[in-house]
Image (cartoon, rainbow, N blue to C red; front, side, top):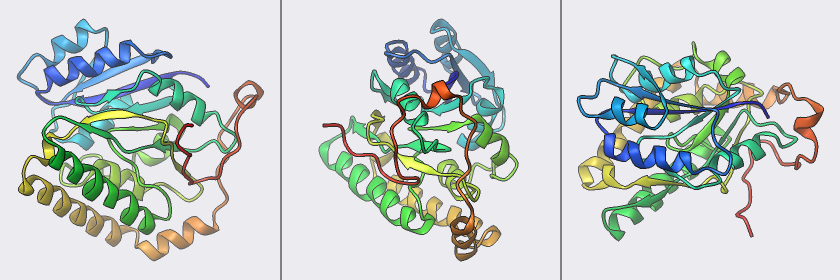
Length: 269
């Protein structure tokens, strides 16, 4: 399947980052490279990353998208796996990415939601059912394929090479994951793999204002995207395009499992 780079943008999140890097060090299939993008931190983010053996990239332009894009550009892996600093991947997260990307349908992106931790049960319920649930249901219907969740996804480097100059990588006022999902080109497929398990902090949803801000930003992102690539035009162009076949060696496909493009993987038994 080739090499896997994990990219983690971080801004003053040293404590969370340490837990994330510990989880990556315990993977059943270790990543070939871990890149932490320091987005102007004034805490120990860089020191924590270096102590864990991660490579540090500095991105002065503030914003999750600028930091993520800088990490993608700097990565050397064949697959680009994405986490947030407060993400805690399950021990088989990297192995599952490798397994799913090697399946016969060869998706461009695999993603899943998150298992929220911290705060209180009410906040976690809102985060899981209203925010993430609505995101996958409503935005997924509009896109015609599963959306991408920024705290838990992986993408082929070849796909990023085609997308890096299309997405709004220098803007901090759009949701990076929604922007990336919108600009998936005709023929590119996105698969939701429910076996990709990642714990995600519920801290952004502490207050109603925090949730409302994220929803407003989602509407703003959709407004930006729709003006540049109208939804109906996008859907029509994607429907007419054949699925891209990414390069694969016989060893990659040996024993690969068939799966529907742009579909959901079942929960493990």
